[in-house]
Amino acid sequence: MIFPTYPTINTIKDVTIILKVGTNRATKWFEQKINKYPYDKVFTHAFLYLTQGDCVDVGFTTSLRKLHDIMKSKAEYLSIHLDDLTKRQRSKALSIGYNKAGAKSKKFKFYDVWGYVAFGLRRLGMKKVKGSKRYDFCSDQVVDVLKEVGYKLFDDVDSETTSPCDLFLLLEDYPDADIAWL
Image (tube, rainbow, N blue to C red; front, side, top):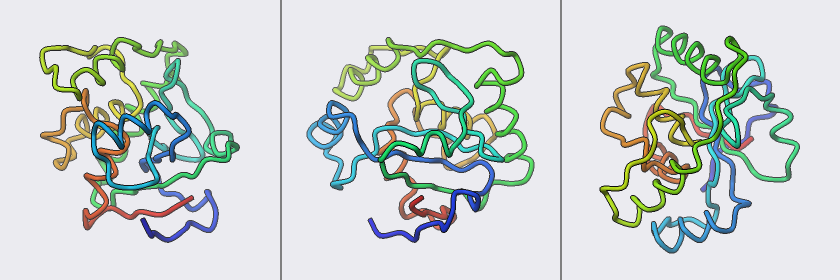
């Protein structure tokens, strides 16, 4: 995976997908062995960069975090900016992202453990297992936001079974995806 590197995180454009290269061994194993992910660098977390350093991040809570705080870990990060998002879609994505993070309502939403377990079971072929539409996990939230703003590429993507690696595979050759390492 050869992509350019942004000179600083201050050059990241509004509404950009950020993927974290794996530190979670279980997720790495699952992606490479079960899902047959073809690359050595496995993405184990996804979040949405909003604007002015703010990211909406799903962990044990859905929260608003600063990108420079997230990047204090020694992990590698890849940014994917969708150049063909319209100004209206971008504005709506910012609003949705801030609302999901609780920035306006000040209420944090607890991480949906069942949603994550259901994701794994569905990826193993148990299609009748249902996750939760109420709460998201990391890549689920990214897909949901982009679907909600009407981004056509994600119309047929099932957010409940989309991993960070799936996001990368969907966008790696997409002509309007500006991809760079951070």
